[in-house]
Image (cartoon, rainbow, N blue to C red; front, side, top):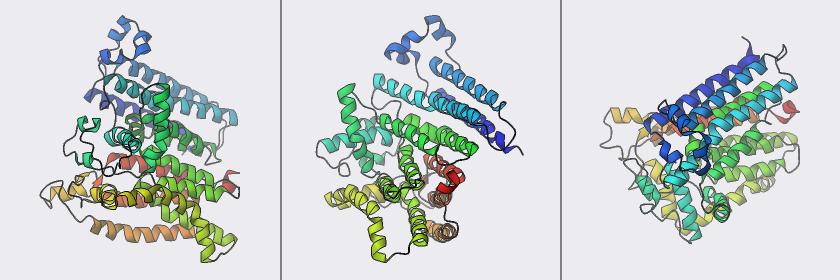
Length: 453
């Protein structure tokens, strides 16, 4: 097997999947040409005849041209690979050319498409071409905060989120994300409104997405591993769609990648910085919590091997995590403990009066198929299979982390634990699988500082 060509095969597969998913989505919800042409300068990009000739095949005319540009870049990557010398790693010039092409492909398939939908939303309405929770609801929480209102108490029935289209919309009564999501975004909201007069939450997600990819490209010394990691994170078919429509998993993944990146630095402040970054991840969304046992084991095991310390010294060492997490989260807990708990935990656990529905791609479908609940909104004790599967799995992965204490294993073990938890929970939505793919890619490709240097 010729593993040195792995990046070429993976790129072709990921881009083909990315493009096909986007075109299928566009076929189910077409983008009218008359709407596209309302976005100022886009209308003049093509002649009237060209607009007509490019219509009615899989997607809109501009997206078709982007697809052609994308496959031009893919073909260039394949051709560049022909100049790769024999051996496991490409020559520096070949690697740099390949990496530049991968970033360009991510630009045409994810970044430009995201900005395209931002523009379409701006000329259409706040509930169009976007995600309900990651964009619409988060924007509304920023407005609530600026008005001095508690986003965990307010409902969203009188916001644009109410116009966003699915049945069983219990999310209108809950904000399930943690405060750092909207606190970090608030300055960008204010700045954007000053500069251009309006705001889209994807501005923040796209900025962090690009920085995350740049950091990820430094997490390994092996050129092929770097290419594989960047293209898997950037062209992941599910997470790519999440970025385009504005789900917030890439926001959480940024803080986790930044945490791993900080841990690769050889500097006395590297570990405190990593703990601060991880605190911000944990203060964003509970999916980051699955990193916690392995991050803490990694640092404890590594530092104990270097210089055994007392429990008091260990607690002091964890303060860079404890302080920012408490400062961000505790005020909202104290503001209204019952509503905070109901939004962040009870809604997804099914114990809230207006709980999230049973759905997804996991164990929940068997519960529905066997008629074990009267409705999708009813309570079912998913905690039992979660405990039965995840408790021994946590013990095994923690033991493996202790025995083989690497950065890659932090990501790999957290992906395994999160996958098991999400599978046995009330819902396994597709965005969780995109997030898990990202963690697995980090677990495959990330390297220790010594291996990198």
